[in-house]
Image 1 (cartoon, one colour):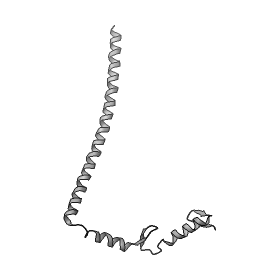
Image 2 (cartoon, rainbow, N blue to C red):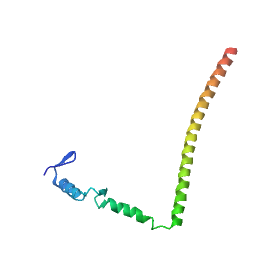
Image 3 (cartoon, helix red, strand yellow):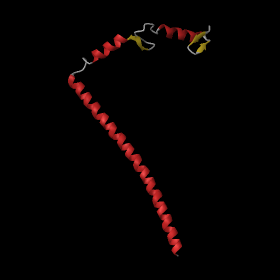
Image 4 (cartoon, rainbow, N blue to C red):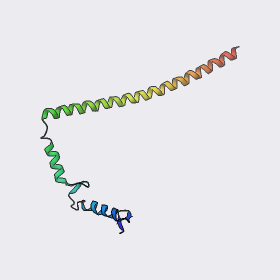
Length: 115
């Protein structure tokens, strides 16, 4: 059996069966936007899930999580700043070594010229 599926052709029966199985789980309803091979969800189901999930946790717990999220976000920002400063320090160290090397060469050339 030969089946053209998207951009390629399937020539083996086992792959054809797999494609048929996969296609049978794809929702043809335009309301279906979420899903995989195991289950296709309607948009309404996803919205209902997220609107109901807020009732599962106490307000105090949500505040704790919000505080943790804010603090972790700030900590991430601090870590990124430290990384940038560390990179800048590495650059300045290398530049300083090069300048010291040039100064040594200049001093050595002056000493050799004086003698």
